[in-house]
Length: 176
Image (cartoon, rainbow, N blue to C red; front, side):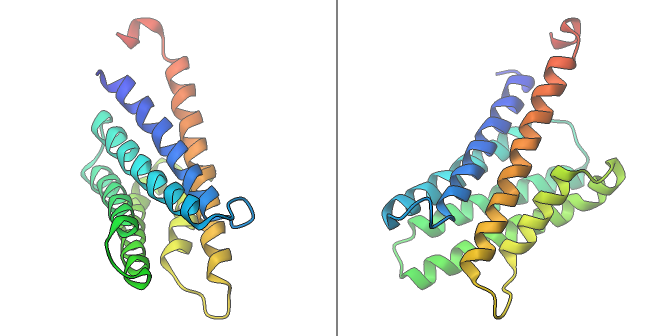
């Protein structure tokens, strides 16, 4: 698979996976706990796969590659938290560790984001990552998680839109 196709597939998988995770984090949309767990699991798997494909397909600085890999690893750890044969408390703790790894990846990407121009996509992604990694006393944790997930879902859809736009704007002789 060529890099263009791999990257575009990665953006699609990431956007679909992030949206699945956002739906799973919205109790009003999914009442069934098993369905919520499945959406969360497959959302993280798709995000991890998509991020890995994007990272593999694009040129980038060491920091960009490292940050993207950390994001992918964080999603994989979160997926393992859902699958772990452990108590709900341990599963939640593994999920939080995955979120922390993803947030670290977003933090590593910040210098390049500032250099390239901080966009709405970058802001929403960093904001969502930050919210998913912290605990705010006195605030409903489920609400904070929902806001974080939807913020990241919007960012991933914007990233997909940007990838599609840059692909369609590229002259055919440059596409290969």
